[in-house]
Length: 211
Image (cartoon, rainbow, N blue to C red; front, side, top):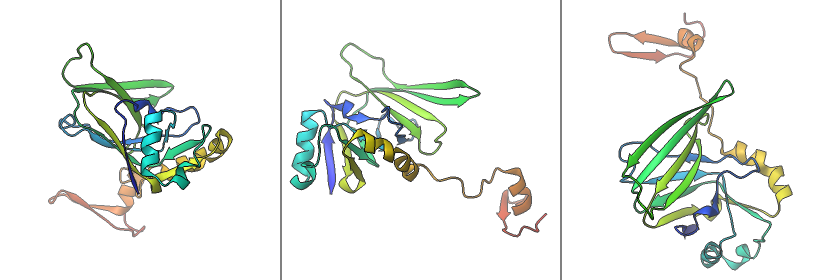
């Protein structure tokens, strides 16, 4: 069952920086076409059930038996969702990497300058393709914002104590997979890759005797 929520007036319902240690991942292509098609995926975040319009919208789309379980102290974890902006005027991104106890930031901007009355929405998470990098986005959008997800991609936890007990499991189940071969490892390249210099590629062999 798919749920669609208009969060234009309730963007804060997405909690991607919660204090409980839940790691949110963001899957987005930072290309020149970003403003034209501003859609991306979020994984592993808390959907706050504090805004009445959001609660009403969820109750209209879910069976009563499910929504009756929701209580004020509970946590609705969404393990995968799509976020769609009907229109984006501009966007600023900050990529952060922690190295030797120092944080290094790369900043990039798209679009037009801010004017009085512009709405700025903040979102972010660890990059799904490079989880060592954290991405923060400030998005200027004048139109509707939609959050879509499947009820099968939700986990409801009734209280903070149980939430803290399950954070490790939730993070582990959603974290990106480790590299299968690590093709940039020098030892692996020497043992298992044979170069074809004329054609411009390497051929992999799982024979450990290869020199």
